[in-house]
Structures are given as structure tokens and as C-alpha cells.
Length: 463
Ligand SMILES: [Zn+2]
Image (cartoon, rainbow, N blue to C red; front, side, top):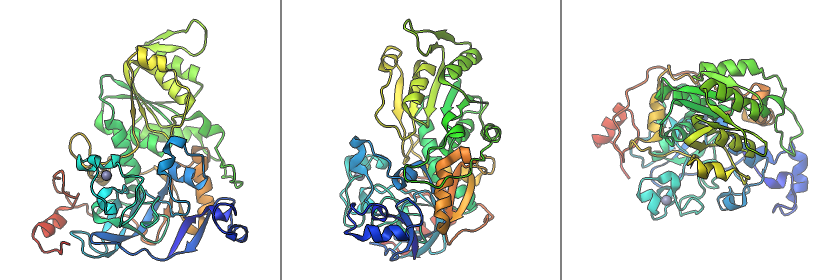
């Protein structure tokens, strides 16, 4: 089968390629360490494992950072992916091969929850997995007898979605019946958005979302669904409309045909009340006027602080600038939910301490405080056409056009791109007829009623 492989030896002969790099460099069609290759089709390592044929597989900022080999914060380096791997953890696809499974059948269309935990790896369960917080698995950096890595898309044995096939355990699957490929490929980022929103306990009526990419928009859609009366302000990412961040080694540039007005309209149509764009000073002033909050000026000059500001900021940019803006926008006792790929920054901790702000990290999904699996809720929402996320996927590319795909994804809204996806061999158009989903028990998989009846009836082979 074919796969888009990240291999540092394609551009760096000194990175373990034993001299292959210089030869390979001529073959690589871009300055990135990626190429489409024929690779061995992975074999399910044990009972319950299945081979998935992708329909669509998304490109996210984590993938781009890995492909561009952006420096990883040192403290997180224990979790880095193997040097040669197949990315892709946002996937809707079809079960191609299943053996000794409880419910997954060949031909089933499925959403993939990509997180690997102790049980998937063949390890004894850690304390967090035993407690049900599998997204916080304490063995995330460890490999076991079955596989290694944190998730699909950064695992040597399981592979990833930028391919014609990869492995998952059936309890990482959720039925995708009645959900189009275009919506199904958003399940993973939508689950990330829902988890981020549920990290906030509402005690006010105004929320700010910083950012303009797919996660920001999915957070807006989630906030609107859970809080119909909430005032949602989006601070459109200033950088992305003016200066796309191209990788150091990435010389091909995407056409910069993004229309900020179109982006603003799209974000409003997904649920935002207001979309603003400007400097931190302008955003603080504008928010103060809107909320009738007091603008307090530090004696030594510099940016003001709002007294009576917003209840929560979801920071999808998570840069030094955006975090500094966020803590100034928040009311005393407010909450900052950090959703972006942040690193080491100098932060105004005095505001966090003196105004008793809460800072919560959000990076994953699993089971939420209501006991429901995040992906189970997202499956219901994606099945409901009133969840307004149809415009989030803006570009589809075959694997072979990876240069264009990665370039457009990296340019983001500056190139009019929100979510860029690869088309896999199972890509289809919309399938009709959403089946009802069964009420979920905490330890049961998310199944359709028909499938659950089959499993309960004992007519399936259980390993
Ligand atoms: Zn664990």
C-alpha cells in the first residue's frame, strides 16, 4: 500500500540514514522530509485490532509541526514521535480487515478516536487508565507488546491516516453511519473543542475565542450549541491574514487568496456574535466598550487591564502575545483555557495571582465529567445537520499532491484554508439514513442500536 511517510533522512543525511539521505534528497519532490512510498500493509497485532482504509484524513497544526520539524519544548520531548512515521490522526474511514472483534465488521464506516492507552499497547493499566482518564495515560511515552506511541499518526506499528491503511483497536472506533466524510473527518478536532469547552465552568455571559483556524471555529460551534445565550467574541488571528508562517525549509508558497471578510462571515455563521481583528490595545478597548468594563492603566504604561472583563478566553493561538492579551481581557476570577500548542513564554503571573484567574490546559478528549465519551457526543452532533460545521473542510487533496496540501494548510486562512484533508481510497459522498445511537454505559463502546443488539445477542465472536 502507499503512504505519506515523514523521514528526516530525506533532507538530512546526518539524521540516521546511513548515507541514504543524499541519494534520497534527489528523489524528494519538496524541501520537506516527506514522500509518498510503497510500504508494507500493517498487520493487526492481536484480537480486536482492525485495519482501517481512510476516506478522509485531516492535517492539523501538530502534524504540520512534526512535518516541519518545529522545535519541541524540551519538557515535552519525551513524547515525540519516532523519527520515521506516517502522520494522520483525524480520520473517517472504513474497516477493511477485522478479526476476533466484538462488533466491528469489514465494511463498517467509522470515526477514529486516535488515542492509544495502556490496554491497546499490551501494558498493565496505569492509575489514570484505571480511573477512566485514558487521555491522561501515564504510559503515553511507552511501547508495549502490541504497539507504541501516544496515538495513531505518531506510532511506528499502528501507522497513520495519511495512507491507504492503518491499525486501530475496535474500542477506538465509533460508527459513522449517516455522517458525511466531510463532517466525519472533523470528529477528532470537534472532540478536542468539546473537551476544551467543558474545561470551563460558566459564571458569566461573555466568552472570547482567540484564533481563526479549525479548532477556534469548532469551539465557537460547541459554545453556541451548549450555551445558546452566550455572547461569543472571536479575535481573528492577526498574523494569519497578513503573514503566513511558512516552514523554514518549505520554499513553495501557497497562493494568498484568503478573504478576511469571507472568514469573518464564516465564523459568524458558525455561531460567533462578533469577529474582531486588530492589535491587543484595540481588542482591549473594543471589549471594554462592548462590555462597559473599566480600562485600568498600569502606572508605568503598557497595555491596560480590564476590570469587569470576560468570563473565559479560549486561546487557540497560545503565543506570548495571545496569553498576555487573554489575562488582561479576563474579569477577576475568570478562566483561561489554553488550547493551542504553547511553549515557554514570559507571562504576567501577577494578574493570575492577584485576580485569582484559573488557567486550564486542554489537549485531548476521552470521557467527560457527565460520564459520556467525548466521541459519543460528537457522533450525535455530527449526525445532526443543525451543527453548522459543513464549511470547515475547505480543501481536499489526493496523497500525491501533498506539497500543495501541506503548503495550503500551513498558510491557513491567509490562503482561504481552514481544514485541509487528504482523500483516501475509501472516500465517498454522503451516506443517507442516520441510525439511532444506543444509550451509552460508561464502559461500553459507542454503537448503533442494530450493532449493540447483535453484540448483546451473543451472535458475534468475542475474543
Ligand atoms: Zn495508561
